[in-house]
Length: 110
Length: 121
Image (cartoon, rainbow over the protein chains, first blue to last red):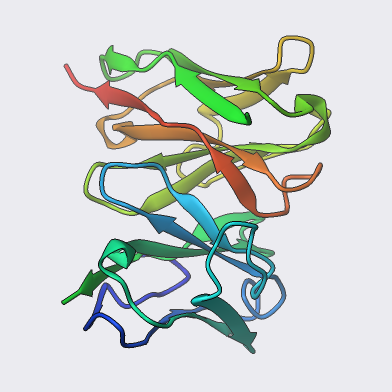
């Protein structure tokens, strides 16, 4: 059981928008930035969002991140079939003195 | 291009040791923190360990603390993970990942392809 919680699954139709949540506490998300990773089937994770709301070069602006209090969110607009993947949030935890990942959210693009 | 290539995985008996390596290229290795992250097939990501750019600072996940040691050779551009007292629950794909900064407290912006470790008798 991770100290950072994500819904296990999400689904939406192509072209629509979806938001994936990441819930933590004052020792992790409440104090530190959140990163988001996309993992396509059979591949290594890939950085999608860093510092809670910044996109690395090459990541489409359909992907956006936000953080408020002890929660963070990843929003994906204009869903495409290739967005079907597992999405993970990650942050530093000051109490554990280490990094924590959310349990992951499997996104299905119907 | 920036690349990380893990090696050293395999099948090992419980209680034995194994050493993983990660060869880095395409960036100034000595300037960045580095991580090990693992994933049981079909399950989520679990952070294992991090080391700062100069090796002076390390942190470990609770499940591996006292058994695993992360280290680096900035002359050979290589990251290592020495795993001892291995348990069946250590079975996973092990990824090395580059940190976005020198300390290991930033994001993980480059990942290797992973190496599989199976702990079984």
